[in-house]
Image (cartoon, rainbow, N blue to C red; front, top):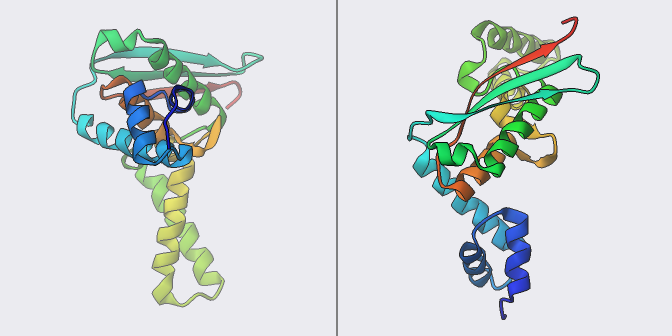
Length: 197
């Protein structure tokens, strides 16, 4: 199948990947747009993993104030260079993360940052639910483990479904940006304020 410039442009618009990367992905997948998107996402993940160890001492602080002024978020997103910190796509990502935090109200950025007392309380609730429903003791731990994974997906920022596109997580969105900008990027911290809470 011939790979046309329109196909390359369409894939580039959908993924923000470079033109040559898009052409190569379309060639490798025989012009199948969905497979090419998946291939580019896999490559983006590989790039993100390679860059994960790099320091992110530059960056930006962005805010989101919800209509009515009763809910606000401030988020710090880090990157490796001042050049990337000033790019439109980086700033837009930080703003989108702030808006997502306002909507989804995460407790922590990663699993490791979830408070131990909150985790213990959830585990106890899930264990008691399983035992009360008559589940055998030998499978209660598996049930609790599965429910804790789901809990992490609800309260950890990077594991939450992205509010603007529930097909991906915030971590997927971050990896796409890392792949397109070629630098390690990290959400460093956030603060969410809500009137009356």
